[in-house]
Length: 290
Image 1 (tube, rainbow, N blue to C red):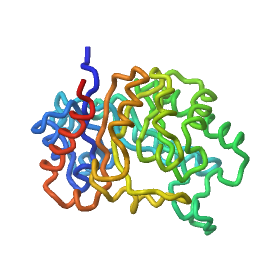
Image 2: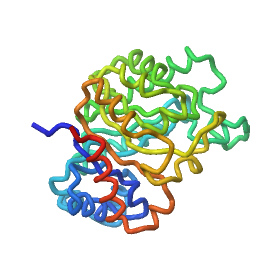
Image 3: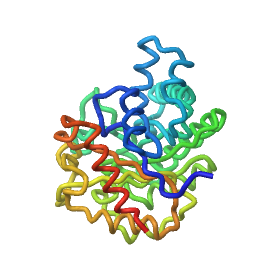
Image 4: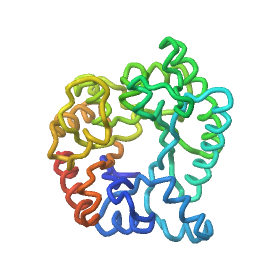
């Protein structure tokens, strides 16, 4: 039986490192596991590591999930590519013994949210009514979840705050419509904040739907289209979010699962990743203290 409130290292803490370094940071600092990068896993295999060597590198590291599958609402010819990417990620998850794969609503591009229209920009379902967006996204997720189940994987949904289906209520509609037991919800403090969800809303979520939590911070958001590279460029704990309030809201649901320290601070990415990870683990330990 796993302990409650596991503190997980996110691969973005050492953004430009290798999987081997991520695993070493998690071990040395004493994290309960690693939320791994699909790209870093793929880089290992592309460089010639065998699956057995990859398994040896990871060892007994608990990996609740890997990231991530983007623009999950893709249709027609784009849908073919979506499922090719999904199958590749599912294989990568299996290669390291991960238990889940993160799936993300689109369009990923901020330019689309800002109204730009060019042939090379994936527009997703932004021009359709919300009901159609929900139905088509849920249909894709149902199919993806069925394939993931064949790999014994959970899919955990995160909606980007500048995309149409960005709020908790909209994500819950998608999950209910998809109707799959291995489809769960990720709570990311920054995406919740910039999409208008509050700690009060989070506290009312069904704990059985929650799979993981991203503990992160933000600069002040005054409305409009949230500019992620700008707003998230802050050390966790030094932004405007009351992290204790958000943490307590999640715990009010009865959730006892894992918490991951996703990080987008450019300065931290250039610092000693072991030291940054230690500060994040200490912060999360304080937030989760009884």
